[in-house]
Image (cartoon, rainbow, N blue to C red; front, side):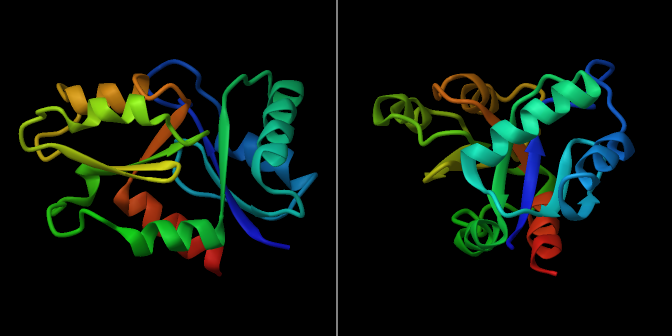
Length: 175
């Protein structure tokens, strides 16, 4: 059975949508093996027989039923995370891993939507590979137009993690 990472979208960010990672872990331990959380922003690694969209829907329904938590959850297998880390298309530019993000998307964006990423974003830039967007934000995210476009302009749901978290999830799923 493959190790997988579930990435919860938009929980424990600011004061809204607060949920205990211990509560999430407790619910998942009833259904999956080797459950482990990382950080407070919705990263859970576990072993399951299902994968992909079927597993995502199952997790979402479980969170609503058990915790009253409505959120999108995206799943990547250990193999997928390994490929994502290996790809690392902007490693040469991204010197601060906290400002280097990977946005995990639910679906591959349409080509027409991707054209917007080719605009002038100053020192920021992004590279799309499949259902992931690698983006570099050297001046941070607070005023980033590129980060806003990635979050809201690609026509699909996404959730971002900084490079340190991506590498850690790859490590945990590979154990």
